Every structure is written in structure tokens, then in C-alpha cells.
Length: 146
Length: 356
Image (cartoon, rainbow over all chains, first blue to last red; front, side, top):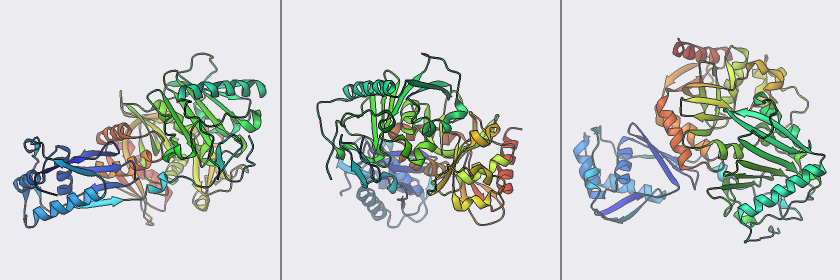
């Protein structure tokens, strides 16, 4: 991961919406969904706009207030976390992201990701079934005839 | 375990056509085509059964939306049959077992025109031809249809057909007045059904306890889909006034008791109302019920994932429609007290204030 790589949201299974600076992100493939704190949500906004790590940290320094010590490392760690969750991926910089980096002032706290996994069971296939003579699987317990 | 026979050359259109022929044969074998009409969200939906074998499993949840018989005028026509009662053998599925993906979607049989789902848990096949506004519903043995299919019949078909840029099925309960009501969102066990059922002993009306259709334009509106109500059997004791609803001998002893309110509380049912808020019930164990404002993002996290992962075909567009709706209404957490009267009083006061 280098400062001049850009980041993009993985599609089409990652859906996301911004609610007044509070991001809701859902991975349609895994069943996991995520909440970010304000700085994390701001970083996601930059990712959407194709910013590089350098552009993100530069922008955050402009509009985040408070103690910014360790900002670069926190952002790098956060991006690594997003990548580990397969929410984002990287590519060579396009040079298009810098102008898009702007946000209202927010108090700085290291970016955080909260992961919810309680919906994953809904995506599990039911492995318990029989297949009848014409080839249709059906729940166990039937007589297996059409 | 054997895998289904595969015929890769058969495409959705051909298979849909073939199944239409099987339905016709099933109608002849079962003594005729039995048509029933419903007004769902202002659209006329015709359910055409082969005989009567499936009717008692499918119709009760939709009875409150029944409309007069009017042949040839339906916006959507669904053909339904089962093999056991009609004696009609199904052609082999033209896909492999491993093509049945999460949420029932069959890989290779979903495109702009056709949508196909086969649910391994219930053995139910759904297909929709969006161009002709025709659907198919088949199960091997209608008499053993799963309780959730009877409580929310044709869920996949209705989601496919109704959901577009301005409408979306959601996993939520809804109660309110003709002038406006609320959506109760949250995963199973959050208290949606308990809250919705508590409304039956008040002047509130009931639009659903599990699934509803939301409309964003021309106004924010909730449409009822089913008059069914489900409740954990160990929770029945909390409803001394409503316990009578759940004493039907036909209610199956499974994880939840199922009742059709059209049979016991028809006057409390509504086809829908304007949406005036999204509430997230939360069981507290305290006596008093309270209401606290929450962010739109939090409400979205309660509504969207449980809807997206339960509804076959729901995806990015569905997420966007739900987000658009959430942004437009006040969102609150409903801290449920143990006193059910207190729960409904808080809701009635909220709606009373909103409706002047």
C-alpha cells in the first residue's frame, strides 16, 4: 500500500449510502454490514471519489480538528481493514481524486469500523434435502415422489 | 446424493413455456382453473390455481385484499399448482443443484425478463416473466408447505414484480391510522410482532407484522401484503386479550404460532396508510415504554440488511429505495416496556401529534 495508490469501492456487491456523514455499508455477498465513525465515514467518501492515501490524509488534516497525531497510520490501518473485509481494492492513481477531497470540519478520532454479522445465517443454503426421481430437491421428510 | 439432471441448452423462456403447459395439464387433471383476484397496492393480481389443492395454504394470508372476480383484467397473473394433488409430473430442472444460490436464486435463469428462484428449504419454485406479467408457483406437495410460505405466500414473486425505482418490499411490521402510521423495523425477535399485535386492542389498524410494500412516490406510503401474524408460543401469555386468536387447532406446533387476522380481527386490518415514521423496537425489560430519536443511519441498519438478505432479488436498487425513504421520515427507537398498553399509548400519542 503506497501513498499514491487510489482506492475504489468493490462492486457490484458492496452497497452504501451516506446519511448526513454516517455511512451504512452492506456486503451483499457475505451478509455482513458495517458502520463507521465520522472520520471513517469521511474516508469512505474519499474512497468513493477515487482519492489516494496522500490526498485523503492531506484533506483530513485540513478539515479535522483536535489532536491529529498518528493520523497517517490510523488511515492506513483503516484502509487495510476495509480491504481485508473485501469492501475496497486498490489501483494506480488516476490524478482525479484530489479536487473532490472536501468535507465540513469534524473532530478527529481515529477511524473505526463496526462490523455486524447477524444476517449471515440468512444466506446459508439448507443442505438437508432429498432429490426426487425427476431431479427436484425438496426438504427431507417427504415421500420423494412427484 | 444425486444431482438434478442438467440440460444446459434450456433457457428461462423455454422452461417458463414448458411449465405453463404443465400448469394447464394440472388444471385439466384437477378439475379446472380456479381464479382468485386481489388488489395489492392498487394493482390487480390474479392467482390461478390448478384445482383447490394449494388454495388453503396460499389464500388465507391474502384474503383481506380480495377483490371482485374480473377475468382478463389482472396486472399480474400467477399460475399455481402442486404435483401431489394434481398428479402432474414436473420436467427435470434444467439447472444443476449447485446453481441454486443464496436466497433461492437460480444461476443462469435470472435476466432482465425472467427471474427464477428455487428454495431448497421449502421446495418451492418461483418464476416471473416480467414482460408478460406472468408468474409461476410450484411445490411438490402443497399439503406440506412450510409455515413461512403460508404466512407470507408468493413473497419472491411479489418482491420481483412490485419492486422498482419507487417501491420496495421490506421486512417490517406496520401499524397506524388512515391518516398515517409507522413502520416497525428490526431483525426477528426485536419486538415487531409483539408491538403490531398489541395494536389490535386499540384504535390502531394493522398492515402487517413481517413484510410490507413501501412506496416512495407519489407519497411515502405503506401497503399491506399479508394479514398473517406470527408469535413465539412462549409469548402468547403476554396477550390475554389476543390469545384467542392463536387457539386455532390448525396452527402448527413449530417455532412460531401463525394466525390469519382476517378470520378473527377483520375490522382491524388496513390496506395501507401514509408513512410518518420508522420505529425500531427494543425489548428493555422495564415497565415503561419510551421513544428516543435515532439517526437515519441506525434505522437503515435495522431495515435494510434484514430486508436485503431475506428477499430474493433485492440488491443495490432496493437499498437505494429504502435509503430514500429513511431520509424522509423521523426515526426513533421504541424502548418496549412490559406493559403493552404503554407501548401502544406511546405510538398513538406520536401519531396523534403528527396527525393533529
